[in-house]
Image (cartoon, rainbow, N blue to C red; front, top):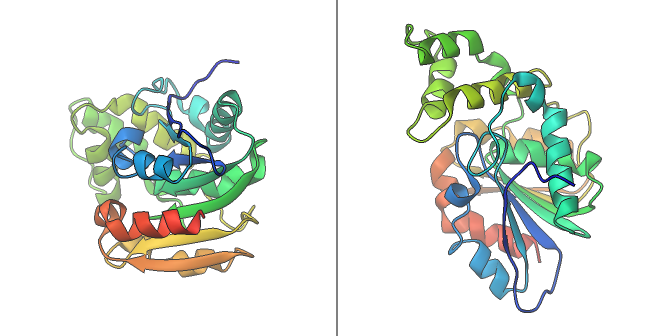
Length: 242
């Protein structure tokens, strides 16, 4: 089986529980969002193998050639294939921002059972659906900067140094074609929703928790980036996965 997504794997000397899958946010990478010294090593010390995924168009994974390659359904299929190819019998999943949005839906489609979820920086709406991808592409090719603030913000993330802008915009277009609908298939496993107190994206996590039969909410210091980097989020995630 072909593994379309790159996975960095850390295996402890003695395994005491399911592997922990770490899924990063948009325009980032597994290594950037989940530094090994902060995540893989402490989890390995606790007897947990980690599988740090690079999403399509990110990190070491292949670029996205078209939106049709990167619909939500296709990305979830790739995640499922990667987990099965890794030989995981069951997993816990920690996702942040885009990674959390995908993890929410992964539970229903994965052939590898998901035991627990930690979802950080998750919005109850689909932000990519409001992005003017055509205007972003035109600006990326030398045209005028998009007038829409959200489109400009997403373009700024996609065009940061080291990013494949066209690939990331194709991913945005593909995900937006199948927007996030938290009510469609809420995960039935224990889930911890974490949001930064100064993060406008995650202010709706109480609403999201209302869809979950086993959901808990935690607020931690920081904005969208600060909450991810903070020790409170990591400590809460590790404790919840026990």
